Image (cartoon, rainbow, N blue to C red; front, top):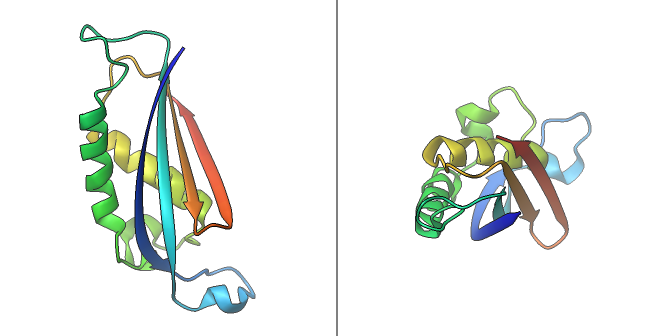
Length: 125
């Protein structure tokens, strides 16, 4: 099995919409570090699992949607609590909208929120 990971960092804002969110219910910023890991059992005709430059370009485009924005104001989070868990899944959705790797069978999005929490969302393709 092969694995290729890329990492991007950015700042975005949100406020939680759960009952009694405490201070997290006010608009605040987080520094996010996202790692996308692509896994698969074989390489393509060029010897790549995924073209790293294409993966970086796709991730930068996705980051551009969220950098310095309030997640609560974006359609993907409409009516939903903008948890980091949900954000990891949505980030992966948008990344795969831009990137269609031939030989990748699994994508894992790990998202670190500041330096206190990290979540992952794994999907089979």
